[in-house]
Image (cartoon, rainbow, N blue to C red; front, side, top):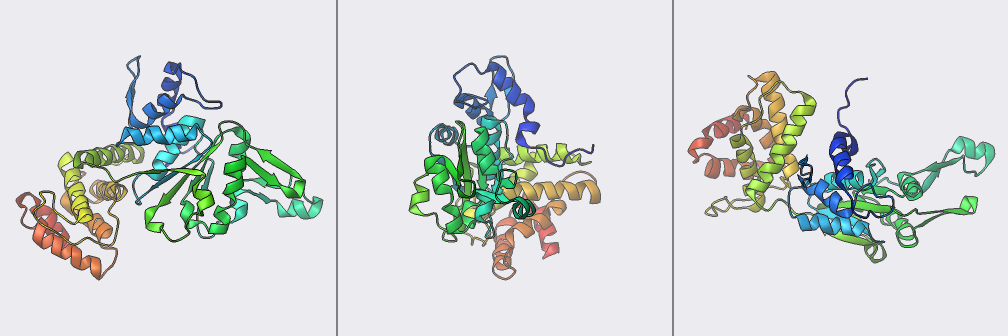
Length: 359
């Protein structure tokens, strides 16, 4: 069988989860694979008693992860909220992998997501032939999670229509999913809970009703606090990408990652790192996830159209593509930043020339 492009968290970090289980002697909530303390260690990293090193999956405020894990031990669901690219889906996946050993029970929210995607559906051929029956019922990830006592994930909750969102209210409050066609119901097994994600850029698209908001405990995931923190995140994720894709390129120099992160942080905040120059901000989010994507794309360029060493020319197109989302407004913002901030920096001449050549 050919190698998978992307493994689930519980497959990719199977050894870490196994080592954590071995050394995890505390009391676990029912149907949890690890204790809450071990789940936080899995997320934030640390050294076990036997010397085994657990890599951090979330680099940031540990307290946020403790709040998120504690929420899942209660009867309230968890809403991970924040800007695009702040690792909401990443954290959701790893939380599910550590708690349930299964991160695959996921519903992707879109404007077209229907009630059937959350509650249950029907095999219509069987339904017409036999009428409503257990065999004709099509279970959703949420229904399976309820039956098995696992975590269900709902991505982009605020992209789903308000009337469909509200189908979650009974599930979250009563821990029951009625199936009136069969005159029955599915009751949640201990260990069941829901992790939803939502972008604050989608605020106002489909606001959660007050009844649904009360069923969630909201944890806001911020952009990385410090430059070093963001550089560390980009470095770790790029190393992981390079390993999976087996690119014939050298690992990127820390200096190149630092320059990308600096550009993104300055344009995001509207001021240079030294605080001396105010600059206009583009319309995009310029998230950490986009910085990772720029470096990954640059590595692919260096591997297949360069000499295997990441250079400014390999990064330029990715930088411009991330910054210039609006071809008129953002282009002016970028040109101004290029001339007033990038050009005067002596050690950035290569980035300046590479970006100018593409404008």
